[in-house]
Image (cartoon, rainbow, N blue to C red; front, side, top):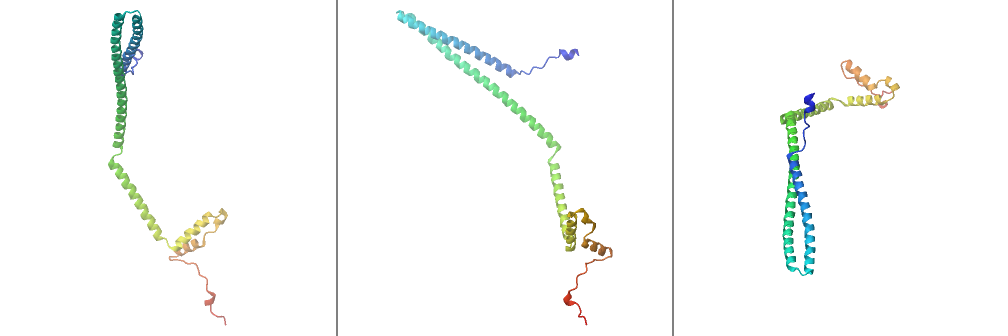
Length: 205
């Protein structure tokens, strides 16, 4: 229990996060310095204007030289701020690239494991078995279609009609089925007696 409570919580802040924080802090300090220099330049300009009004041209000229130097510092400060912002953007973009690479690596690992489970040989075997099953079923269908006679086809149709009729009418079996069954039981085909043509009947004397 003691080890459990004494264990420090693992920090999720990376070295890149710390670097970005430090760069942003330096940038903010430079912006504060830039703001302070800008205010000083405005005051010095106002003072130089007042010195010129008082006829103190040399002092106004010296003050403007100092102002010019501060303006150069202001330009350098702006360049440094721009460099810091570019560095921050580069680190942040690199972090995004690292996350993308981690995602790709994880995806490749998943694909590799899936390929181990289902190899190319296994896929080809399954496809071959499927094709064989389809071909076997097609051959069966062709055999069944060729072995049935027209009489069998008519019997199937009659049985189909009998199945679709109400339950009370199923007590009587189709005539062709009975005749066909009786003929096959006797050892030969049995055909229903055909009606005699009255034109061919013998004359009655």
